[in-house]
Length: 455
Ligand code: PLP
Image (cartoon, rainbow, N blue to C red; front, side):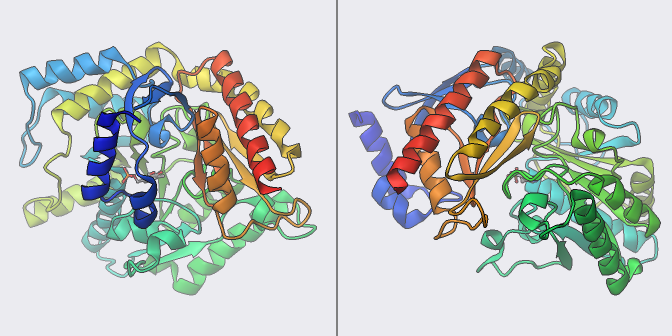
C-alpha cells in the first residue's frame, strides 16, 4: 500500500465504526479502501481491479460510472439543492418520481411516500399499519407476520421484522409484536421425503394456524421479500406467494412486499410480485431505485391504505411522520434519471436474457465438493457451502467457510458477499455475456482455492 492508503487506513482504524464489521478484527486487518469505479468494476488503493459482483450492496444497477446520474445530480444541486416536502411543500423531482413509480409499479399501487433508506421505509410501513388500524377503529390489529431469515433493515421496528439472530442479539429486538414463520427454502427446510408442493402446503398451514392462534383481528400485516436476499438468497417454493396472498385476503391482513433488493429488474421482471403472481397492498422500494448513487427509498400503497391514512390526517390535522430527507430533490432527480436509464437500456430485459447463462453457469458448481446448493433467479444467486454434501451439514463455526471463500474470490478479482453459509452474487444489471462468463470463472477459482485451503 502507498503512503496515502496507509494514512487513510490508520485514520479509518482510529475513528470509524464500520457497520456489519468485527471491530476488533478491523483494528488488526484494517479497511479495504475503494477509490474509484468504472462500469461493473471498482478499484482499490493499489489500483487492483475487481468485478463488483454484488453491485455494491445489491444496488448499483447501472454500474459505477454513469455520467447521466452525475449530470442529473449536478443540475439539481444548481437549481434547488434542497427543499422539503412537509406541510404541502413540493418540488418537481419528487412529484415526477412519485408519478413515475406509480406508472412502473402494479396498477393497484398509486400513492408514494419517500424515505432515505429501506429501514426507514419499513419502519414507516409499521407506523402506517398501526396508524391506519387505529383510524379504522381496530386498535388490536397491530401484529406482524414475517419470516425467519427475512431481512427488512436494522432500525428498531424494521430490525424487529428482520428474522436474523445477528440483528436481534444484544439489541433487545424484536421490540414490536412480530411472529417469524419458517423460511420458505425447500432445500434447507423441506423434510425427508416431502415434495416441494407438500413443503409449500406445510408452510401455508403454519401461516394459517399462526393467524388463527393469534386471532386474525390482531394481525395487521404480513411482510416478505419475494426472493429473500440478505438472509442468503432464498427462492420461494412453487405456489408459496399466491398461497400467502390468498391467506392475507381471507383474513384481511395487509400484504407488504419488501422489494428493496428485488425491485427494478433484479429477478428479470420489473418487480418480484409480478414474477410470483401476487398483488401487494404495500410495496417497499430502494437500492436500484437510484442505483444507490443517492440514498432513497419509496413506499407505494393502494388507494384503500392511502384513504384510511388520509382520512385520519384530516381528523388529526396532519400526518405526524416524515424525514428531513423525504423526497430529497437531488435523490429524486437521480432516481428519476436512473429509472429512465433502466428503461431506455432495457436493463430488466438484460437481466431476463442473461438469467440462463448466469444461473446455469453457476449451477456447474453444484458438483463442487464445498457446495451444497446453487440457487437464484434472474441476476441474483447464492451458493450455500456445506461440510457434508450428503447430510447438508454446515461448516463450523457458522459462516466461516463462506467468509473464507468470499475472501479468496476477492483475491481473484470478484467481490461477492458471504451471508451466513452462502456466497451471494448480485452483479450490476448492465453486465454483458462476457462479464457473466468472467464472474463465473472467478467464482470457480475462488471456490477451488478455498477447497485447497480447507484440505
Ligand atoms: N429490506 C431489504 C429487503 C433489504 O435488503 C434491505 C437492505 O439490504 C433493507 C430492507 C434495509 O435497507 P437499508 O439498508 O437501506 O436500511
